[in-house]
Every structure is written in C-alpha cells, then in structure tokens.
Amino acid sequence: MTKNSDRILDDIRRDYDRLQLENRTRLEERKQEIFEKVPAYKTLLQNTRRAELSALYQKLAMPGEMQEGGSDDEETLMDQESLRRKKESLLVEAGYPADYLSGVWQCRDCEDTGYLRDAYGARSIRCKCFTKRLTERLSEESGLSELLKTENFDHLSLEYYQGEDLENFSRALDLCRKFAANPKDGYKNFFFYGNIGTGKSFLSCCVAKELLDKGLEVVYYSAGRLFDRLAAAKNAGRSDQEEDAGAVRSMIYDCDLLILDDLGTEWFNNFVFSELFSLINERILKEKPTIISTNLSLTDLKRIYSERLFSRITSNYLICKFTGSDIRREKARQRQEDQN
Image (cartoon, rainbow, N blue to C red; front, side, top):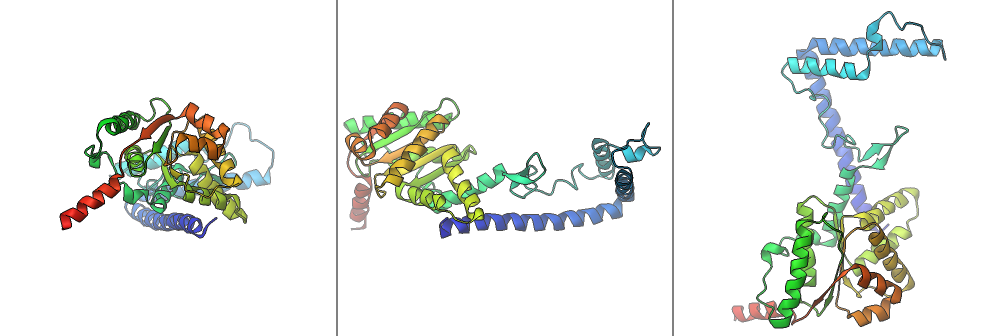
C-alpha cells in the first residue's frame, strides 16, 4: 500500500472508532434516562439477565440433557422476539420511540463498525457504509470531488463546437445523458478518444456527477495514478496491508462506474498491459460500466496495447470520437483578452 492508501484507510478506521465511542456514550446516557423514568424497563432487564444466567448454569450442570415439559418459570423461556416486543412496548408507553435504545447507530447493519457478521458471528464482511466512505475518500484523493464543482451538465456549453466537431460531441453527449439518466437500464461502456482539450474528461465528469447524485459508487483515476494504486495493492506486505489493498482493488474492479482518464500517459510495461486487460475484461464480464478517455488514436491503441485489448474495447464499448481545437487553450486566450 502507498502511504496515501494507509492514510485513507486509517482515517476511515478512526472515524468508526470515534463513532463507536460516541454511540456507547449516547447509549449509556439513554439507558440511565430510561432506568430513572421507566423503572419497569430496568426490572425487566434484570429479571431477564437472571433468567439467562440461571439457564446457563443449568446447561453447564446438566450438559446434553433436556428437561421434559420445560421450566416451571415461563419467563426463563421467553424468546428474543417476545422480549424485544415487551421492551419496545414499555418505551412507547412512556412516550419514547420504540428504538430509543437501539437506534443510536448511523448504520444499523454494522452498528458503526464497518463490518457485518458472518455465519460464525465474526465481523468479517465489509459493510456497504465502509464501501461508501472508501469511495468518497478515493474521489477526494483523485480530485474528482473538486472537478465536479464545475465539470457537470449544468456548466456544459456547446459554444466552442462547430460543424463536424459539434456533431461528434453532440452524439457523445446524447449517449451520456441517456446513460446517466438511467444507469441501471442497460449496461454500457464508453471509449472517448481524440484531440487534447475537446471535452473528453469534462463529459466523463458530467456522467460521474449524475451517478454520484443517484447514490452510486464512482471511482475516477488518471491512468498513471490508477496503475500506481494497483501496483501498490499487488505489492502489499503485511496481512493488514493486504486486507486494505484488497479493499481498494475490489473498489476499482467492482464500483458502479470506473472512469479511467488519460489512458496512454502511464508508464508502458508488462504489469500495466496485464493489469489493464484484466481490469477491462473483468468489468466487462461483471457488466460494470467503464469510461476510458485517451488522446491516442485507435491505431495507436492497437499498436501499443495489443490486438486482444483493442478487440475487447472495440467490441464492448461505445466508441466516441472527439474533434476540434483545444477548448482549455481557447478559454485561456479569451480570459487573457478580457484582462487586457
């Protein structure tokens, strides 16, 4: 893992530790309040605990034996559902919400631990709330959060496109709007290629903003940063680092939308070629949408990355060509003229 990866995951763990401490404090305060104002609730808990201890001692004293007809004390055989209803009834009668002593968590599924329990009761399954936090932190790290403030459909303008350039961009824009409006309605990938500064990254961000607003997981990386991240995950050493690396790698492979920006700016080596093919192929098999943007031509793509990768992309992606002049340069020129 990179130092940045360690920092992100350590920060998330600290957030959960802080939440659990706050929850324990809040729960204890609420318990004391209920014990004071609803004495019957405290009595019920005390009787239940005594009954549970009695049943446990009995089981330890007579292992493997069952009493015929059950216990004389029906209270000791109260099932958990019945007990829950009794406790909730006492709270409601006293004017409290039924979940007053069980609703202190931000995430009820994992009780703010970040992990769900497996079949053995151990918290070993990463919760969706942990995944959401990780997605948000990866977005911050990659700069996506800052980009989306200005690069979205609300700020999109066609004034810099004319003729064939406008036709090309309008086609890509129409496809992206339809996908962003209903991302679950049909699986789609996009391959944006063409001249520098013609709106490829901007349009990718527009789609990202729409999906994030719908609560979906979006991971955005430049090609160089992505392969650095995957290399760090591959080279993780200690068991805790391997777990963290697996979480980040899983996010990249399984997120609802992966945006791989500026393909072709990364170092070219066997690891990159192998990892890129694996990433693209697996997301195709899982039907996970991906947007790739590059300044390379299709001919360069085939020459640099192999026939096999070229075939995967051209067979499974909507190919959108961007043409025209460098809009960023044009905007900079206009700002300079305005200042003069």
